[in-house]
Image (cartoon, rainbow, N blue to C red; front, side, top):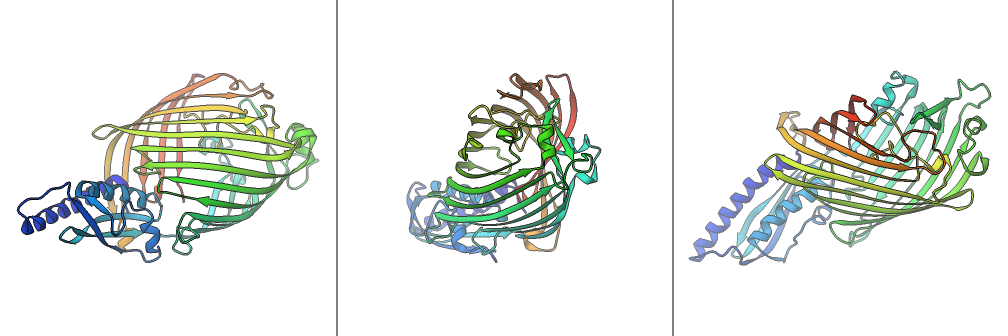
Length: 475
């Protein structure tokens, strides 16, 4: 298993060896060597891919058979291709090197170590936003979903994903989805779709004191067994014209129903005192990615923007536009700086509680305000982080080629965050319509399968401080 910086040393070894061989061979045939002279890419040999199709790997390369490139350009292309292949989430390790050459024709070898793609595992997960929110409820096991989760991340070897969930506990949930982003011969067009169904005995009925307020069917005598029921079915279209750019169009038909007990606690949960809404949703997303490691970028840029239209009547009249920019730079040896800027606008600005989730949900939050949520229809978050690598090592794991070691990269971090949430309707909570800021320092542990353990000690403008744990992974 490999993280990008770990693989670079090995890649550079291969590259230096390849360059040495190339120069020696050419010097044998000629008296002088010109590194700017064009070479023709010959055969491309791919090994180690038992499941993944060759053309899926070749799709991520910056060169192809017959291309004419200089030695310098070829060396740069090797590293860029390595990063792109790692960012497919298909491989633990990738090594690209010059295998052989004939005059000015160079053959290239690509050796990959595939991940495990099938995860039929038991499922156990708290339903709260993060560990801090679960801790505030005394780690109550009634607030846990459990069941079975099956995911195949490379179903036919074309980086397609099949997901089936059967969850019970806090909620009853069933999901079935399939995504095939490379469905045609050009590997530019794809499709996907699926459906989900869920019932919940507890619902976040409103926000009070900048925190989610839940009501439970067991504690509300006039409530039914399930306080909410949702169903959605969607189809989607993928378009990837190049290596760095992706487009997604997603169409969903959804329905959401709440028990009358929820409307008693919050008459504005839906518009017009409704207990059920049925609506279509059309969403477009654009993504540009050019980073060394998408799960923990230290160099490069990710830009994403999207537009969503939810509903077509007064019962559900909702537009959302957002942008997200992630930019990272190397500063010095083992030092980096990164910033993340996210902006969200929901329109019209007057929305029911159902459409008000903003700060504190998903990845849209300020470190140091982990305990709180801030509802609204417009918001901004700016996060600034300095990284310093402390350790970079691996430990033996299994006697299997693809999983023979577990890599670890450990970083010390220092950060400052800023944010703002505008709310035109629900103004009782003290954190709305005001500038928010926080800061702190922490420790990030990045390991295999894109797992990121982040331990932060942070401070906020309320004079509070605390230790917070976040776990992130993309599988």
